[in-house]
Amino acid sequence: MESAISKTRLPSLSQLRAFAAVAEYRHFRDAAAAIGMSQPALSGAVAALEEALDAQLVERTTRKVIITPLGERVAQHARGVLSGLHALTDEVEASRRPFTGPLHLGVIPTVAPYLLPVVFRLVRDRYPELELNVHEERTPQLLDGLGSGRLDVLLLALPGGRGTADIPLYDEDFVLVTPPDHALAGRADVPRDVLLDLEILLLEEGHCLRDQVLDLCREVPGGTRAAGLPTLVQLVAGGLGVTLLPATALDVETSRSPQLAVARFAAPAPGRRIGLSHRPASARTPEYHRLATALREALRPLPVRITD
Image (cartoon, rainbow, N blue to C red; front, side, top):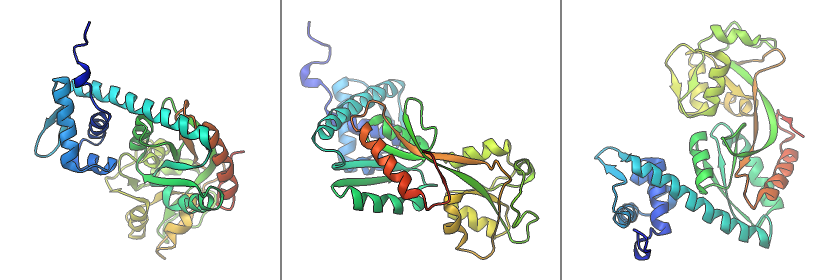
């Protein structure tokens, strides 16, 4: 019996890839940029997919893109198809030679500026045939990219996402950054519960560091939000409050202004664990473990505790 969707109307991989990007970014221009396709070509691919399936997947408005309920289910299937194809190409590439060809590494913004110099040096010196492509995005986008096959491995705060395989690299403490005249400035024995009484400046939603700070502080008063750590630190320098920085970011961010002081927490200090996350069934899993071993050694000079 012939399928309702004949062979001549099966969706193409380019159509599925375009629609999965639109479903992820909810914006045609951003989706086109993410997958290296022109916006007219992406719009045409999505329209062709809708025609092939004889179904509306997208509601187009002047300001935003809305995915229909059926479109959400189709997007899930599209991600599965693309992930399977990515796994197939991974299998072939890994069978040839490790640490060769492209590797798409996703990194969270509160790690990227402080660790990427170490990562780039390591890859340049030890894996010269590895084509490292770095994508700096917030955690939800990274996990979506990993699940869809757009990204290969992530460098982020652990645990990763549901169903990821995680490889710990190091633990690091949070430090409190304050104005110089703050009552806690310069102390090395700050109790953790003092955070409940402070006006903590936070990152915008979507940053995992924001969630970690909220877990420490329960409810944080005030409405000031910043897009990145450099802005947070400048707000502190302006006397608008205090903030928490991971230890790896401290030297870089506090060197930009003399109007800052640092306070450290009494043991055990609050902190976070950083590591690699990948798809459990990836053919490159042995490479990721070898990369993690090399990274641990390269990261020892930083103010972290390596997780052997």
